Length: 196
Picture 1: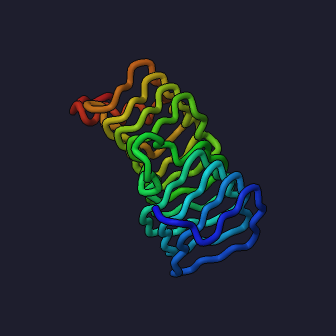
Picture 2 (picture 1 turned 60 degrees about the vertical axis):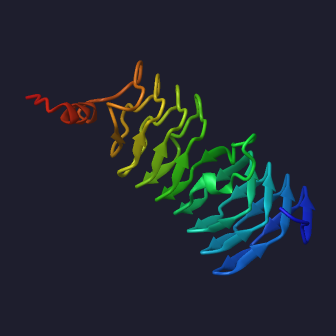
């Protein structure tokens, strides 16, 4: 990835703002970002390892040769983020460690693993989970706003009192998953079954 221009470890970074600008050659490890804005920012040759983002905004970032690993997001606004674009090492494919109380729109989670993870404090809108491992994950009470799950392991996942999700019952693994009605009845429409 090339030599980093600036390297920071264990730092608290507050109010950083990149709006339609390029952030290039930065290395952050065990850093905490608070109230930072990355709006249409381009990340080039950057590294984020075990960082925490609190009340930060990521809006449609462009990503090139940037590696994110084991990061935590708390009370953040995430729009148009494809998290796997932040993976630059085929052996370590875990950009996100946790997501809590975040609002996410048009985010893509592809080939990611969140077994048993509790997503219930988050709001989703038009997000996509594809080829993910979500066995035992909890979406209980979540507003999912058209969020879809495709070719994903949802065994034992909890969707009770959640709404707005789109599940591919033919290609997702659903054994032991928990649903509430009437949302569960919507799953049957793919089978062309009518319930009165």
